[in-house]
Image (cartoon, rainbow, N blue to C red; front, side, top):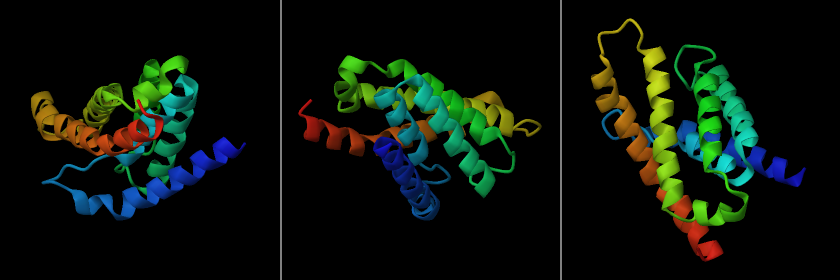
Length: 163
């Protein structure tokens, strides 16, 4: 129960940080996705089911507060899929090696890329932006920026657990 309360507290703190601070970190139009990094962390630490649940709850929270655009349910869908995919990086015996190593960055990049692709394929329906433009304008830069931000928790975990 204490673990769940800790995850809920960190989720709300990251949500506030994501809402209030992250918009000021924009490079052109690209933002890092702190909550997606958190979903990947939860999935790598606790497994696929925990990642899916965290993704759905965080996505729903973003949907209800208007943080993921104007399509209700799109954030829940994409974050749930992200939690599902991130769960494939779960290995009970190598949790801290994964979180404290570059496997975490690889997982953030790959999960973020799929997240952005799925999100923008649905969100940009009916616009003139093609698939290539979507990848180059939104998916790839957002994934790389999120991976860059994910270096911070990776280094903290690596230092703390000596991996």
